[in-house]
Amino acid sequence: MDYFHLEAKVVSRGAGRSVIAAAAYASCSRLYNDYDGLTHDYTRKRGCLYSEVFLPDNAPPEWKDRQTLWEAVELAEKTKDSRLARELVMALPSELSLDDWKGMLERFIREQGTDLGMCADVNIHDPYPPGHNPHSHILFTMRPLDEHGKWQAKTQKEYLCKHGSEERGFTADEFKVAKTQG
Image (cartoon, rainbow, N blue to C red; front, top):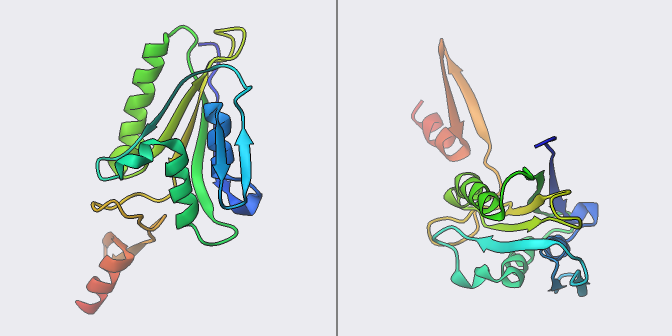
C-alpha cells in the first residue's frame, strides 16, 4: 500500500447533512428521507463492490435493511442540530483482494462497533480503473443499543475524582451513588 488515508466525520443536521443521504451515497443506492422529504438517488454512481449492514445481537432484525435502520436513527433524534452518525472513509490496500478487505472490515466493525452496541453500514468502493483507489465508507450509529434493543445516550460523562493519593473514574450514575456513600 502506497499511502494511508482515514477521514473521520460526524453526520450532523446542524451541518446541513442527512444520514440517509450519506448512506445512499456510500451504497450507490436510492433512499428516501422522511425527515426532509427528499429522495437521494446515487444509483448512477459506479464502483460499489460490497455493501452490508452489521447489527449487534440485540438490534431489531428489520434494521438489516439500510432504509429502515437510518429511518430509525432519524426518528430517534429530535433536534434540528442532532448528531446522527459517525462516518469513516478509509483507504484499503490495493494489494489485497475483496475477501481480504471484507475480513479486515468485519473484524474492525465487530471490535469497534457491534460489540459495543453500535449498528454499522459498510460499503467498499473501487472506482474505475479498478485498483486505483479502493476505499471503504463506514457509518456507525451515534447511539449504542442496550440489551433490550433500545437506544442509549450518545455519550456518558466520566468524572475523575481524587481522594488523597487515590484517583478513580466514575460515570454520572456511579458518582451519585458514591457521593451518597461519602
